[in-house]
Figure 1: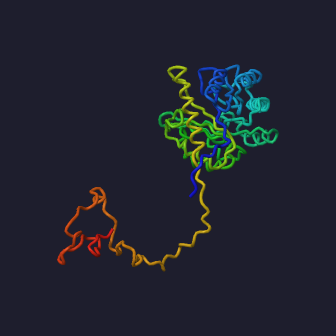
Figure 2: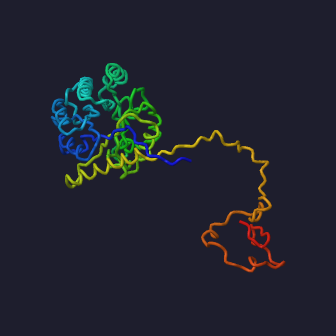
Figure 3: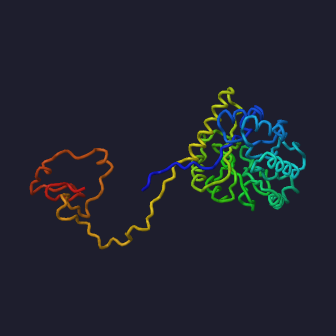
Length: 345
Protein backbone atom coordinates (compact mmCIF):
# COMPACT_ATOMS: atom_id res chain seq x y z
CA UNK A 1 0.00 0.00 0.00
CA UNK A 2 1.26 3.46 -0.83
CA UNK A 3 2.25 5.71 2.02
CA UNK A 4 -0.42 8.02 3.43
CA UNK A 5 -0.11 11.60 2.27
CA UNK A 6 -1.38 14.79 3.83
CA UNK A 7 -3.38 16.59 1.20
CA UNK A 8 -3.62 20.31 1.75
CA UNK A 9 -7.24 21.17 1.00
CA UNK A 10 -8.54 24.34 -0.54
CA UNK A 11 -10.76 24.82 2.50
CA UNK A 12 -10.22 28.19 4.15
CA UNK A 13 -10.58 28.61 7.91
CA UNK A 14 -12.21 31.87 8.94
CA UNK A 15 -12.86 33.55 12.27
CA UNK A 16 -16.38 34.62 13.12
CA UNK A 17 -16.37 38.13 14.51
CA UNK A 18 -18.81 36.80 17.12
CA UNK A 19 -15.93 34.74 18.56
CA UNK A 20 -14.29 37.81 20.12
CA UNK A 21 -17.42 39.15 21.89
CA UNK A 22 -17.54 41.32 23.97
CA UNK A 23 -14.67 42.78 21.95
CA UNK A 24 -15.46 44.61 18.71
CA UNK A 25 -15.64 43.66 15.05
CA UNK A 26 -12.43 45.61 14.48
CA UNK A 27 -10.68 43.50 17.13
CA UNK A 28 -11.76 40.34 15.31
CA UNK A 29 -10.00 41.48 12.13
CA UNK A 30 -6.86 42.30 14.12
CA UNK A 31 -6.80 38.89 15.87
CA UNK A 32 -7.55 37.02 12.65
CA UNK A 33 -4.58 38.70 10.97
CA UNK A 34 -2.25 38.09 13.89
CA UNK A 35 -3.12 34.40 14.23
CA UNK A 36 -3.07 33.67 10.50
CA UNK A 37 -6.74 32.98 9.78
CA UNK A 38 -7.70 32.86 6.10
CA UNK A 39 -10.50 35.38 6.56
CA UNK A 40 -13.45 36.40 8.69
CA UNK A 41 -17.17 35.84 8.79
CA UNK A 42 -18.88 39.08 9.77
CA UNK A 43 -21.69 38.65 12.27
CA UNK A 44 -23.97 41.60 11.58
CA UNK A 45 -25.25 42.71 14.96
CA UNK A 46 -25.42 45.75 17.25
CA UNK A 47 -21.80 46.82 16.71
CA UNK A 48 -22.15 49.70 14.18
CA UNK A 49 -18.96 48.66 12.38
CA UNK A 50 -20.48 45.26 11.56
CA UNK A 51 -23.32 47.07 9.75
CA UNK A 52 -21.09 49.47 7.79
CA UNK A 53 -19.87 48.02 4.50
CA UNK A 54 -17.24 50.71 3.90
CA UNK A 55 -15.84 50.33 7.42
CA UNK A 56 -15.62 46.56 6.90
CA UNK A 57 -13.85 47.07 3.58
CA UNK A 58 -11.27 49.37 5.20
CA UNK A 59 -10.63 46.82 7.97
CA UNK A 60 -10.26 44.04 5.44
CA UNK A 61 -7.79 46.03 3.33
CA UNK A 62 -5.80 47.30 6.31
CA UNK A 63 -5.30 43.86 7.88
CA UNK A 64 -5.14 41.89 4.65
CA UNK A 65 -7.97 39.65 5.85
CA UNK A 66 -10.79 38.98 3.38
CA UNK A 67 -14.45 38.75 4.34
CA UNK A 68 -15.44 35.21 3.34
CA UNK A 69 -19.01 35.19 4.67
CA UNK A 70 -21.70 37.48 6.07
CA UNK A 71 -24.00 36.27 8.83
CA UNK A 72 -27.37 37.98 8.39
CA UNK A 73 -28.81 39.65 11.53
CA UNK A 74 -31.14 36.83 12.60
CA UNK A 75 -30.67 36.85 16.38
CA UNK A 76 -33.17 38.04 18.96
CA UNK A 77 -30.88 40.97 19.80
CA UNK A 78 -30.67 42.01 16.14
CA UNK A 79 -34.37 42.18 15.33
CA UNK A 80 -34.05 45.90 14.50
CA UNK A 81 -30.63 45.83 12.82
CA UNK A 82 -30.81 46.95 9.15
CA UNK A 83 -34.63 46.74 9.28
CA UNK A 84 -37.51 45.08 11.08
CA UNK A 85 -38.45 43.39 7.78
CA UNK A 86 -36.58 40.04 7.60
CA UNK A 87 -36.52 40.07 3.78
CA UNK A 88 -34.87 43.49 3.77
CA UNK A 89 -32.24 42.09 6.16
CA UNK A 90 -31.47 39.29 3.70
CA UNK A 91 -31.32 41.67 0.75
CA UNK A 92 -28.85 43.87 2.61
CA UNK A 93 -26.80 40.83 3.66
CA UNK A 94 -26.63 39.71 0.03
CA UNK A 95 -25.56 43.21 -1.06
CA UNK A 96 -22.90 43.29 1.65
CA UNK A 97 -21.54 39.90 0.56
CA UNK A 98 -21.43 40.97 -3.09
CA UNK A 99 -19.66 44.26 -2.31
CA UNK A 100 -17.15 42.65 0.06
CA UNK A 101 -16.43 39.65 -2.17
CA UNK A 102 -17.88 37.10 0.26
CA UNK A 103 -19.25 33.87 -1.16
CA UNK A 104 -21.83 33.03 1.51
CA UNK A 105 -24.67 34.55 3.50
CA UNK A 106 -25.49 32.54 6.61
CA UNK A 107 -29.14 32.70 7.60
CA UNK A 108 -31.24 31.11 10.37
CA UNK A 109 -34.71 29.72 9.74
CA UNK A 110 -37.43 32.15 10.90
CA UNK A 111 -38.74 32.33 14.42
CA UNK A 112 -42.11 30.65 14.69
CA UNK A 113 -43.84 33.93 15.54
CA UNK A 114 -42.66 35.41 12.20
CA UNK A 115 -45.59 33.66 10.57
CA UNK A 116 -45.72 35.21 7.12
CA UNK A 117 -41.94 35.16 6.77
CA UNK A 118 -41.91 31.49 7.82
CA UNK A 119 -44.63 30.55 5.31
CA UNK A 120 -42.69 32.09 2.42
CA UNK A 121 -39.17 31.31 3.62
CA UNK A 122 -38.24 28.23 1.57
CA UNK A 123 -39.51 29.63 -1.71
CA UNK A 124 -38.20 33.12 -0.94
CA UNK A 125 -34.68 31.92 -0.20
CA UNK A 126 -34.75 29.99 -3.46
CA UNK A 127 -35.77 33.10 -5.42
CA UNK A 128 -33.03 35.19 -3.81
CA UNK A 129 -30.44 32.51 -4.60
CA UNK A 130 -31.47 32.67 -8.27
CA UNK A 131 -30.56 36.37 -8.37
CA UNK A 132 -26.93 36.13 -7.23
CA UNK A 133 -23.80 33.98 -7.14
CA UNK A 134 -23.76 34.33 -3.34
CA UNK A 135 -24.89 31.19 -1.54
CA UNK A 136 -27.64 31.45 1.07
CA UNK A 137 -26.63 28.69 3.49
CA UNK A 138 -29.45 27.97 5.96
CA UNK A 139 -28.18 26.96 9.38
CA UNK A 140 -29.38 24.09 11.58
CA UNK A 141 -30.83 25.29 14.89
CA UNK A 142 -32.28 23.51 17.96
CA UNK A 143 -35.35 23.36 20.17
CA UNK A 144 -35.30 25.68 23.17
CA UNK A 145 -35.31 23.82 26.47
CA UNK A 146 -35.99 24.84 30.04
CA UNK A 147 -35.83 22.08 32.65
CA UNK A 148 -38.19 19.39 31.33
CA UNK A 149 -39.98 21.67 28.86
CA UNK A 150 -39.20 22.11 25.18
CA UNK A 151 -40.29 24.86 22.81
CA UNK A 152 -40.04 24.71 19.04
CA UNK A 153 -38.91 28.24 18.32
CA UNK A 154 -38.07 27.94 14.60
CA UNK A 155 -40.20 27.38 11.53
CA UNK A 156 -40.59 25.58 9.24
CA UNK A 157 -38.09 23.35 11.16
CA UNK A 158 -35.03 23.74 13.38
CA UNK A 159 -33.66 20.66 11.56
CA UNK A 160 -33.19 22.34 8.21
CA UNK A 161 -32.47 19.04 6.43
CA UNK A 162 -36.21 18.37 6.51
CA UNK A 163 -36.73 21.17 3.99
CA UNK A 164 -35.56 21.76 0.44
CA UNK A 165 -32.80 24.37 0.64
CA UNK A 166 -30.09 24.79 -1.95
CA UNK A 167 -27.28 25.17 0.60
CA UNK A 168 -26.81 24.41 4.28
CA UNK A 169 -24.62 25.59 7.13
CA UNK A 170 -23.92 22.95 9.77
CA UNK A 171 -23.17 24.30 13.24
CA UNK A 172 -21.66 21.73 15.61
CA UNK A 173 -22.64 23.59 18.76
CA UNK A 174 -26.24 23.53 17.53
CA UNK A 175 -26.10 19.79 16.81
CA UNK A 176 -24.93 19.33 20.40
CA UNK A 177 -27.73 21.50 21.81
CA UNK A 178 -30.37 19.72 19.71
CA UNK A 179 -28.80 16.36 20.64
CA UNK A 180 -28.74 15.40 16.99
CA UNK A 181 -26.63 12.72 15.36
CA UNK A 182 -24.10 15.09 13.80
CA UNK A 183 -22.66 12.70 11.22
CA UNK A 184 -26.15 11.61 10.15
CA UNK A 185 -27.11 15.26 9.65
CA UNK A 186 -23.91 15.78 7.66
CA UNK A 187 -24.89 12.84 5.45
CA UNK A 188 -28.38 14.25 4.91
CA UNK A 189 -26.91 17.58 3.84
CA UNK A 190 -24.67 15.79 1.35
CA UNK A 191 -23.32 17.95 -1.46
CA UNK A 192 -25.65 20.80 -0.42
CA UNK A 193 -23.39 21.48 2.56
CA UNK A 194 -21.93 24.89 1.78
CA UNK A 195 -20.58 26.19 5.07
CA UNK A 196 -19.43 24.95 8.49
CA UNK A 197 -19.52 26.60 11.91
CA UNK A 198 -16.89 24.72 13.88
CA UNK A 199 -17.43 24.60 17.63
CA UNK A 200 -18.09 21.96 20.27
CA UNK A 201 -20.69 21.14 22.89
CA UNK A 202 -21.72 18.63 25.53
CA UNK A 203 -25.45 18.41 24.85
CA UNK A 204 -26.41 21.15 27.29
CA UNK A 205 -29.66 23.05 26.77
CA UNK A 206 -27.42 26.10 26.41
CA UNK A 207 -25.78 26.81 23.06
CA UNK A 208 -22.22 26.39 24.35
CA UNK A 209 -19.92 27.06 21.36
CA UNK A 210 -16.89 25.48 23.01
CA UNK A 211 -13.43 25.40 21.45
CA UNK A 212 -13.38 22.29 19.20
CA UNK A 213 -12.00 19.29 21.04
CA UNK A 214 -13.32 20.39 24.44
CA UNK A 215 -16.78 18.83 24.11
CA UNK A 216 -18.38 15.66 22.82
CA UNK A 217 -19.04 16.53 19.19
CA UNK A 218 -17.22 14.57 16.43
CA UNK A 219 -15.39 17.71 15.30
CA UNK A 220 -12.32 15.86 14.05
CA UNK A 221 -14.37 13.29 12.10
CA UNK A 222 -16.42 16.05 10.46
CA UNK A 223 -13.21 17.73 9.27
CA UNK A 224 -11.79 14.41 8.06
CA UNK A 225 -14.96 13.89 6.02
CA UNK A 226 -14.69 17.36 4.52
CA UNK A 227 -11.12 16.55 3.50
CA UNK A 228 -12.10 13.25 1.90
CA UNK A 229 -15.16 14.65 0.11
CA UNK A 230 -13.47 17.60 -1.58
CA UNK A 231 -15.60 20.15 0.29
CA UNK A 232 -15.38 23.57 -1.40
CA UNK A 233 -16.95 25.80 1.27
CA UNK A 234 -15.44 27.50 4.30
CA UNK A 235 -14.94 26.38 7.89
CA UNK A 236 -15.63 29.16 10.38
CA UNK A 237 -14.48 29.12 14.00
CA UNK A 238 -17.51 30.30 15.96
CA UNK A 239 -16.71 29.85 19.66
CA UNK A 240 -17.72 31.61 22.86
CA UNK A 241 -14.88 33.48 24.57
CA UNK A 242 -17.01 35.81 26.70
CA UNK A 243 -15.64 34.34 29.92
CA UNK A 244 -11.99 34.45 28.91
CA UNK A 245 -9.98 35.83 31.82
CA UNK A 246 -7.96 38.13 29.61
CA UNK A 247 -7.32 39.11 26.01
CA UNK A 248 -4.33 36.75 26.01
CA UNK A 249 -6.49 33.81 27.09
CA UNK A 250 -9.08 34.64 24.41
CA UNK A 251 -6.39 34.76 21.77
CA UNK A 252 -4.91 31.47 22.97
CA UNK A 253 -8.34 29.83 22.64
CA UNK A 254 -8.75 31.14 19.11
CA UNK A 255 -5.24 29.97 18.18
CA UNK A 256 -6.06 26.52 19.57
CA UNK A 257 -9.27 26.36 17.54
CA UNK A 258 -7.45 27.35 14.34
CA UNK A 259 -4.73 24.75 14.93
CA UNK A 260 -7.38 22.07 15.53
CA UNK A 261 -9.16 22.89 12.28
CA UNK A 262 -6.02 22.96 10.17
CA UNK A 263 -4.64 19.79 11.70
CA UNK A 264 -7.76 17.76 10.95
CA UNK A 265 -8.44 19.30 7.55
CA UNK A 266 -5.02 18.02 6.46
CA UNK A 267 -5.53 14.60 8.06
CA UNK A 268 -3.56 11.94 6.09
CA UNK A 269 -5.72 10.33 3.43
CA UNK A 270 -4.36 6.94 2.32
CA UNK A 271 -3.80 6.27 -1.36
CA UNK A 272 -5.55 2.93 -1.71
CA UNK A 273 -3.95 0.27 -3.93
CA UNK A 274 -5.60 -1.10 -7.06
CA UNK A 275 -7.12 -4.41 -5.95
CA UNK A 276 -8.50 -5.39 -9.35
CA UNK A 277 -5.44 -7.49 -10.24
CA UNK A 278 -5.63 -9.69 -7.15
CA UNK A 279 -6.83 -13.32 -7.62
CA UNK A 280 -10.34 -14.29 -6.59
CA UNK A 281 -10.00 -15.72 -3.07
CA UNK A 282 -13.68 -16.34 -2.52
CA UNK A 283 -13.28 -20.13 -2.93
CA UNK A 284 -10.52 -21.54 -0.69
CA UNK A 285 -11.80 -25.12 -0.60
CA UNK A 286 -8.93 -26.46 -2.70
CA UNK A 287 -6.17 -24.95 -0.59
CA UNK A 288 -4.45 -27.38 1.80
CA UNK A 289 -3.73 -26.25 5.34
CA UNK A 290 -0.80 -28.69 5.61
CA UNK A 291 2.59 -26.96 5.13
CA UNK A 292 5.10 -28.31 2.61
CA UNK A 293 7.20 -31.26 3.73
CA UNK A 294 10.39 -29.20 3.91
CA UNK A 295 8.73 -26.61 6.19
CA UNK A 296 10.34 -26.90 9.64
CA UNK A 297 7.15 -25.71 11.34
CA UNK A 298 4.90 -28.42 12.85
CA UNK A 299 1.48 -29.21 11.46
CA UNK A 300 -1.47 -27.85 13.43
CA UNK A 301 -4.69 -29.84 13.76
CA UNK A 302 -8.21 -28.49 14.11
CA UNK A 303 -8.33 -28.91 17.88
CA UNK A 304 -5.63 -26.32 18.42
CA UNK A 305 -7.66 -23.35 19.72
CA UNK A 306 -6.55 -19.84 20.60
CA UNK A 307 -4.89 -19.17 23.91
CA UNK A 308 -7.19 -18.13 26.72
CA UNK A 309 -7.01 -14.64 28.20
CA UNK A 310 -5.37 -16.10 31.29
CA UNK A 311 -2.66 -17.77 29.20
CA UNK A 312 -2.03 -14.57 27.29
CA UNK A 313 -1.52 -12.68 30.54
CA UNK A 314 0.71 -15.42 31.98
CA UNK A 315 3.04 -15.35 28.98
CA UNK A 316 4.84 -18.35 27.41
CA UNK A 317 4.85 -21.66 29.25
CA UNK A 318 8.12 -22.55 31.04
CA UNK A 319 10.42 -25.25 29.71
CA UNK A 320 9.05 -28.65 30.76
CA UNK A 321 9.98 -32.26 30.45
CA UNK A 322 7.52 -32.49 27.56
CA UNK A 323 9.61 -30.04 25.58
CA UNK A 324 12.70 -32.16 26.09
CA UNK A 325 10.85 -35.38 25.33
CA UNK A 326 7.51 -36.33 26.92
CA UNK A 327 6.98 -39.85 28.27
CA UNK A 328 4.52 -42.20 26.61
CA UNK A 329 2.13 -41.94 29.54
CA UNK A 330 2.01 -38.13 29.54
CA UNK A 331 -0.77 -36.32 27.69
CA UNK A 332 -0.56 -32.88 26.06
CA UNK A 333 -2.65 -30.08 27.55
CA UNK A 334 -6.25 -29.97 26.40
CA UNK A 335 -6.80 -28.02 23.20
CA UNK A 336 -3.31 -28.55 21.77
CA UNK A 337 -1.69 -31.30 19.72
CA UNK A 338 1.97 -32.10 20.08
CA UNK A 339 3.95 -33.59 17.27
CA UNK A 340 7.67 -34.43 17.47
CA UNK A 341 7.79 -33.04 20.98
CA UNK A 342 6.77 -29.46 19.89
CA UNK A 343 3.62 -27.79 21.32
CA UNK A 344 1.04 -26.79 18.67
CA UNK A 345 -0.07 -23.12 18.58
